[in-house]
Image 1 (cartoon, rainbow, N blue to C red):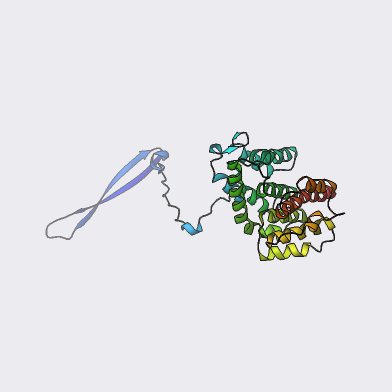
Image 2 (cartoon, rainbow, N blue to C red):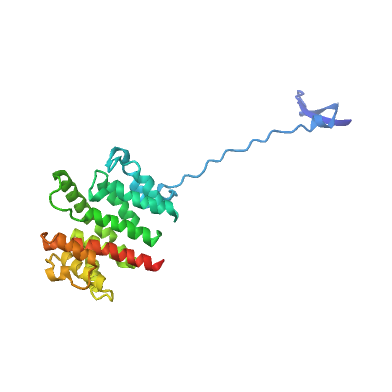
Length: 295
């Protein structure tokens, strides 16, 4: 039991006298818990300080993902219908190493450049593929393989194709030329296989990545690899607007046997077109040889 005293001072106003303070005393009898009742604690709400827009942290989105997200792939036609499979294939290509990645790279060709033909999805696919080539965090074989796909998309197609295919090829060629400056750093500072692939891209589009890129092509002409030196010589003529000498196209004793057969099969083509084909096909052989040697 707890006994306590509660004092309640009151003031009585008596006329003619000073105020008389009287104290009423009340005895309180009860359990201790009765007079020690807990008070509910209310935490004050504190608003988070506003963060200026220019200081907000935005989740990182890779350039490849940004390019993929900018296009409605379902609404575009690929080689086998809607190109909605394209984003998943690209993500697999830039994903972990393994059989799935290799298979995805093979299938990627089928969607945008099946049997050398271009499709509605090929045009926006260029920007995505260029972003893959620029990504320095990806494996050399991935960047080089995708650069070779860019090469086939930008290469001139053979005469006699349907008019709509020729028109699309021209659109893709112009788009590829616009993308070349963005590939300059990859060409100048990338691994040798990527340089070879992008050397050929410049040759078939007839444009250099930059003035520095053109100078780099000239330096490759002095390469110790005679095959690389040969296609660099052709590429330099093509990006400089010169017509390659027919002897330079044939280059006896340097080009692989299958390339020489290709030249014979298409001997009636212009020297410029034939030179582009030679550089393109030889670049494929070179990249494959280099990557195989590194394994």
